[in-house]
Every structure is written in C-alpha cells, then in structure tokens.
Length: 153
Ligand code: ZN
Image 1 (cartoon, protein in one colour):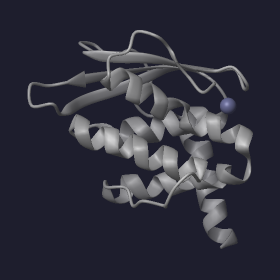
Image 2 (image 1 turned 60 degrees about the vertical axis):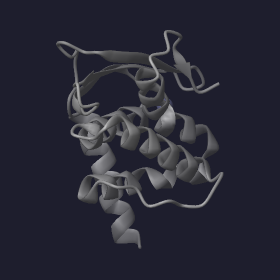
Image 3 (image 1 turned 90 degrees about the vertical axis):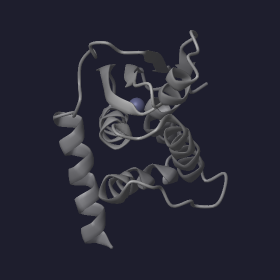
C-alpha cells in the first residue's frame, strides 16, 4: 500500500510541476474561473465543445498549490474526447468520491481515470478536498456556462 501511495505522490508532483494542457485555449466555447480562497488557488478552465457535444480540447491557466494544479492537469487529460454529459457525470463522481458524501463510483476513462485515484489521499484532509475539487467545480460551471466564478465556499 505504501508503494502505491508513493506512486500517487509522484504522479501529483509530476502533474504539478509539468501541468498538461496549460495555457489559454484558442477557440474556447466554454470557460469558467475557480477560486478556493482558503488556500489561494485560482484557475481558469477552458473547453472547446464541437457540434456533437464532444469536448475536443481543454486547457487551464492559473496558480495554486500542487494538489489544485495536479487535479486540473489530470482533469484536462481526462475530459478531452469526452462528451459533455459524461464529463458532468465525472464531475459528480469525482466530487462525491473526494468529499466522501456518497458511494465510491467508478469513473469511466480507463487509465486516465485510474490516475484520479492519486487525489483520493485528500479525503483525510478536509481543507485539501477543496484544492482537489476546484478544477472540477470550474468544469461544471464551464459546461453550464455560468458567468459567475465557481468557488469552493
Ligand atoms: Zn490548494
């Protein structure tokens, strides 16, 4: 179990240090800001959704702690190629899992979804749950096209 924990820690640090899909997105159709005042995490998530309601590209920018950046990086990796309905289900599954408010649901997406397990460690630290779920709240807001920033508060 410790080996797995080390692997997850490495994965988080890797994504925090070299975030995937970082920067503004050309031709974004949806975007939202996420703010976690408790930690000072602030990010903006961009999506490009095509006519078939598939997310054909995603990116984010902003700054925050390692967990918030790694979570956003893992999120963008996972949702590219997903249809928006599946992405919304994934938002539900991830936030439910990390907040421990419901049954642990399996998340579609194969290996990329498995990597989200790296975030599970935050469940022991309620203040870090907000860091890990921030990008997901921004995803939900972006898809629903809300103009107000998503906040963890
Ligand atoms: Zn944070």
